[in-house]
Length: 572
Image 1 (spheres, helix red, strand yellow):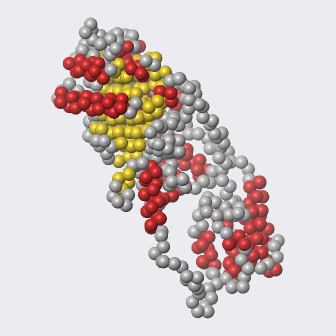
Image 2 (cartoon, helix red, strand yellow):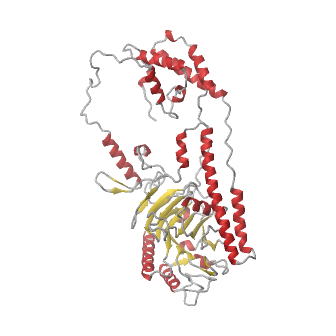
Image 3 (cartoon, helix red, strand yellow):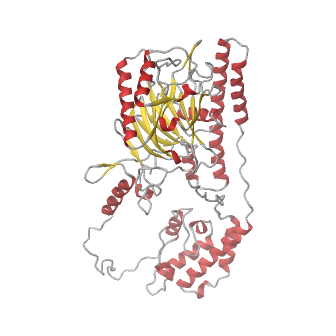
């Protein structure tokens, strides 16, 4: 629901909002977003947008991206790097976003949920795949946020993304975040949620030792352990959480997540509770995914028995290009109009015959119109982008010195970013050309050229000043507002309210008034019962205008017989 004018038109007849409700704004501690819909009347469980029929695993990724300020380009590059891989939720850390609470749909249909507030520092976010719908999002601070999702047979899962302070920052900040993790863990247990905690913990857990809890850390291939790594292990032991990527560690080279010059260490982890860990099939570090960050992403794959009934997908048909009148239509219409003896017709017969001529001319013109070919796609830059990605991945196996490898990797990364930006420009241009080529409404062009979708309303104060967040409550606030706005202040309407004053008749319409009325007709609106719409009348035809002017002036006669169709109305 857009925050612009005319908000009432976005409320459906059943009192619900569109399913693509988005949220953006500023919120902080305890600010939660809960959605309801026809599939979820209670607002407690979200259903997936698409049934997972081919995938039997749910993939979680955590990635320290080191800035998402150029959000469109960085997301596009990240999705390109993940092309060919299955993913469902990505937990981003160190996004550097300034918005304290943001939620919107990407151009790919995925959903972004962010929690920031400090420029060029910290920031966490989620990217939820378009096949899923969320139950609730909570932005706690610029270092921690939570997202609740219902995952088929796994049930309700709470995802928590964490970005811990680095070693130079105080331990008090670290303790405060661990306290918040414990609160989220308790709340998840109280509500029957499973829990996943992922992110950059800025802690090295190293290899498993004799005094470690076997259920917390696996045969990790790393060596060093820091004090904050010991704190992380202690927290996992108390809260019964398993460090997934330590159990599937195969070698040092495939386990490290952070590089600083020649130093490699493990700072990013995915923590799972016992129920999720029991169905986890793999956890690994993706060495071939790189968007220019000094971290590498961590993946965790959870087995999902697809015992939910498959939803029958609606058959998608290509929308037919709306017909537009041409010069041939005008010639056909004028020929039909000249064949009718208008002098012998009264007002009602004139309207009937005019409708028949308009419909006949439109039908003949549409039958004779050739099919419009598809506009060719813009120049495809995908092959070049994929070639550069493969070239950058091959750098790791080359014999070049480390400094040259780094310089070459940065150079190729900038080239990939430039091509992505160029491809987005081509896509926008192609969409605009297609609209103009198919004679569509040019009002659609601003929606394409604008970068991100408009913000959406997720909270509103009612008449009593109480803030409501539920979708049906917001719809009720709108309904009561417009009901009161348009309610009549007159106690009753007498029968003679609109009685004429004196004997003066309405003066005849002029040609200038008729032209102005035709000019103001809006295109692409619903047709009447006879199939007549504005496009059939807004043509440059003097014959049609003269006939319309004579007909309207004749109807001004009090004794004129009105067409029966004029006494009915259809609301669309």
